[in-house]
Amino acid sequence: MSEIRTAPVENKMGTMPIVKLIFNMSLPIMFSMLVMALYNIVDSIFVGKIGEEALTAVSLAFPIQNLMISFGIGTSVGVNALLSMRLGQKNQEDVNKAAMNGLFLAFVTWAVFAVTGSAIAKAYLHSQTENQQIIEYAQQYLYVILILGIGSFMGCMSDRLLQSTGRTVLSMISQICGAVFNIVFDPLLIFGIGPFPEMGIKGAALATVAGQIFGIFVSITLNIKRNHDIQFKLKNIVPCGRIIAQIYKVAVPAILMSSIMSVVTYFINLILSSTPNGGDTAIAVYGVYFKLNSFIFMPVFGLCSGIIPIIAYNYGAQHHRRITNSIRGALCIALMIMTFGVILFETIPGKLFDLFSASDEMRRMGIVALRLIAPSFFGAALAITMSSVFQAFGSAVYSMIVSFARQIVVFLPAAYFLSKTGDVDNVWWCFLIAEVMSVVMSLFFMNRIYIKKIKNIPFDK
Image (cartoon, rainbow, N blue to C red; front, top):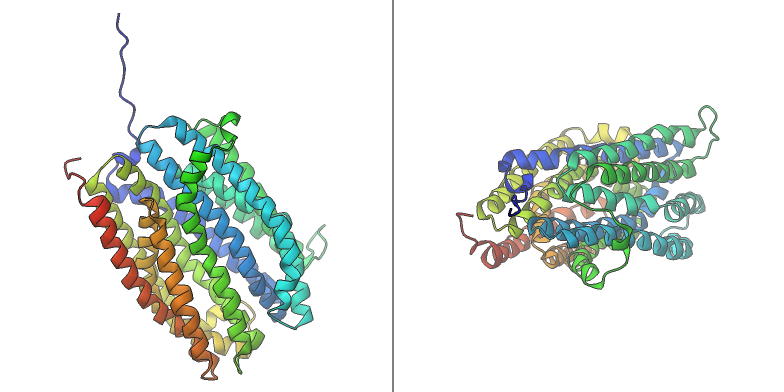
């Protein structure tokens, strides 16, 4: 009797109606990222109660912290794109190897940062300010984040494995668990509530890494027990040159693209501190802006994280209409989110800065900054969405080029020349100037992607 073979069950990314699929995939990520953004804001609100110097210290530490996040997310984006594409192609062996090699790369990356970051932290901080109190605060914060930051890398990778196979609700659960843990322990460790010692800014850092480590255990447990599209076998953790090369084909541009922000923030801090009416207060304003902007941008990044596996899967399966409808749907949702952000920043900027116990001068400077920066959010909606599309098609180098040109070629020079007017309020115009350029370049590369990779896919697929 001949063996009866059944066709493999199609993943929901190839069958579910597009609008429903985008929300199904993205809403959990958006919600978890919104919680993480709120955690970042709450964390800075508590730090702000220590004093403006503590808030400035966290702003100075941000470039290194962002560099860690860039490597963690960038590598996981490479794994995400490869794994989803191989899943669409029904290549189970590569799916398994991509997942386990991704976890290996996350561990190695943390080890490198823990050693090298700790070695350069002090010199890095001294290059930005002469205020010894700020330097002391920043050192306390950075050393904890670097040495105990394994959760930043392993947790990110583990969550992306859930997202890559469409299990975004499970990813949301692990991220929320880590964020809530962090929010709860922030005040306990900073101010010494109950049985906990008063640790100040070091307590904020410890709450952060503890939340990340807790999130790892939740995420890995959910992967092993619920992520049936991946077979977690230790033999696959052995580095595979072919798989790692494919991961970094997408990951390296994504890492470089995100890492540029660390470089830019470092130099912007120097520009702001050297502007006659800027100084450490302007650095604190810039840091608070990033905390507030994360409340708007994080959901958009979550949306785009959700569409990467959708587009990659349907590109692997050669579904033309599902690809183009996914791109249009994501862009519309991103624009709606950014519109809300513009309204918020334009109407109540003073109240937003009051959350951080801002001084009168910091509040005044912050109101001007938010109102000048807000219109650039519309361009950011398009640029961020297109960047994720490029990554999904394995063309993350386009994302890197746009980001590099925006940040290095336009943003930094514009900020520098505007600072020469002698008024720090003029520096914030650099955001809008840079976003115009990124929109033009993103549309140019999107047209190339369409012609080379989408146009010739049959519509009847």
